Length: 412
View 1: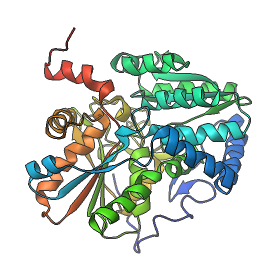
View 2: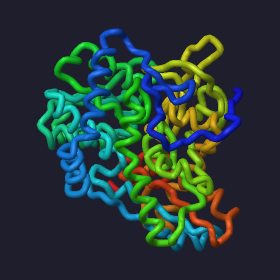
View 3: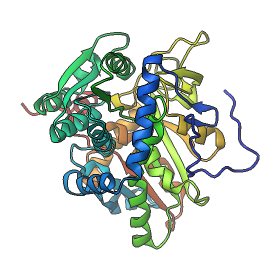
C-alpha cells in the first residue's frame, strides 16, 4: 500500500473539503444506485439551507443543550496521569451524553433535517447499538416511525442496546446475511431506503457513505472538538499536544480532530481495531492491510482481497468491526496530517478494566482502543505535555461481554 503526501501542506479544516462532488482528494464521492442520486442531491441542498437557517441552528443548539446534555466536560484524569508517569491526560466525556455516546449529536441533527424535509419515517444501521439507540431516541422525540438494522451477531453481543431500542419504540431487524455484523446492516438499510425513499430518511451513523453524509456527519460532530478546544484553552491556556480517538467509520474521531486540523503543533492519532492481530480476516485496521476501493457509496481504504472481494473483519468492539473507513480519514492519512495505528482486542480489554479501576470510568470497548493508545503515548511525553482522549461512549453495553472474556463472574 502506498501513500501520496502532497509537496505543500493543504489547508485541512477548509470549506473546500470536500469539493462539490463530495471528494476529499481521490476519496469520497457518490457511488449509489440511480434511484438514490436525486434524494442525495435533495438532502445535500436541504442540509446547506439548514446550515444557514438561524431557526434550525437555534433549535438544534437548544436540544443539544437541554435534551442531549452538552457541553460535555473535559476531565483531567489525575490518577491515570500519575500512574502513567508522563503527559497530563484529559478525557473528553462524550460518555456522559444522553443515550451514552457521541452518536446522539449526529442523530439529532439528521432527525431535525428529516423533519424539515417532511419525512415520516427514519431508518438506521448500527453495530455496537449506540447509533441505533440514538436514532430510536430521536424518533421518539420527534414522532417518527423507526426501523433499525443490526447484524445478528451484534444483536447477541449488544443485547442491552437491542432492548433499549425496542423500549423506545423502534423495530429492530436482525440481519443474518454474510458476517452478520455492521457491513450487512448497512446493506439492508440502503435496500430499505431505495424502496421507501419518498417518506423515509436514512440516518447514517458515521462519517462514511455517499456524499453528503461524510461532511454532514462530520459537521454535526465537530462540536466535540470545538468544545474541547475552548475547554483546554480555559484550563491550560494553550492547545493540546496530542489528540487520540478510536476510528471505525470515524465520526467521533473526525468530530474531535476537525477543529484542530490547521494547528500544526497538535498531533492526532486515530486508533483502529487490531483484533487478534494484523492477519487476514482477524482485524478491522483498514490502514494496516486495506487498499483503495468502493464500498457502500464511497471510495476509501477497504479490507478486500486481490479480486476486490470484501474480507471478513474482527473486533471485540462491534462499533469498530467494519471493512472500510471514512473518506476524510483516508485523505488525512495520505496527506500525513493524522497518524493511524491500531489496538488489539487484548489491549482494548486491558484499557477497559484499567480505566475503570483507576478513574472510576467504564469506557465503551470502542473508546478503550483510544485509551490503550494513550497508555503507550503518555509515558513517552514529558509532564509538560497535554493529551486529550475522546471517550466516545460508556461501557454499560459491554460489561457482560467483557466479564465473560476476562473471567469475571457476573452477579445473578
